[in-house]
Amino acid sequence: MRNILTICQKEIKSYFVSPIAYALMAIYAIVSGFFTYVAVGYFLDRSIGATAGRGGPMDVNEWVIRPVIMNVGVISLFLIPMITMRLFAEEKRSGTIELLITSPIRDYEIVVGKWLGALAMYACILALTVVNLGVLFLFGSPDWRPVATGFLGMLLQGGCLLSIGAFLSNTTKNQIMAGAMTFGVSLLMWTFDWFTGFKSDAWAKVLAYLSLTAHFEPFSKGVIDSKDVIFYVSVIVLGLFLTTRSLESLRWRA
Image (cartoon, rainbow, N blue to C red):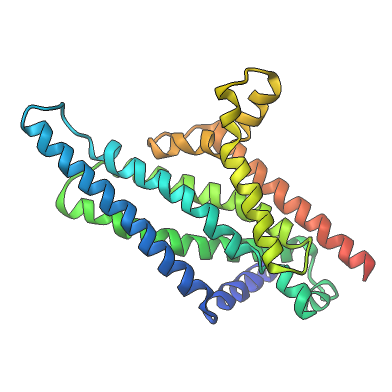
């Protein structure tokens, strides 16, 4: 456990000693702030119409919190490849991967430590969403549970994609290639459930089950379903397992 935490701390420091962390947080703050501003503005406009007799009562959780959380999930498709593309590709490019695989550290400790460091970086970025939505609690009384479950869902979804990105980063020395592959796989997993719109075959249902959207949407509604948690945890374990096996193959070739 000590080795895992040491590698995790090293990864976190590597993000913040370079412009990567600050650039990602700045981009996320601008985009998520814009989404929050638009959602609140639309909510206020419709609320005025409701008070004038042009509609029913408005729910801030349904009209602001849920759309913001869903949009944040889309933003992660672009940010996560930037976080994971350097995990192993940079080590290979600089030649420091040999030091890792020949050190008295187990392969799974390297993989889990790097993944935890990337997850911590992602959590720091997501914390900006809490700041944005926290403004709602200063001027109103929305339900806090959709925010908490939404944040949990974003962490689980992020952990899922980060594990996949770690594996893809370990397959190449090129960071750009690693980021592009991670983005492509993430985008496909986000849109898998589109097939059920015009297909009812068994393979379409399987792909729909593998869709990130299908498992993330309940969290945005404030619902924690065990099948969604199991799905994300299973993909995380699978991604870390594949990354560990890939790292072991490097050790054999070395």
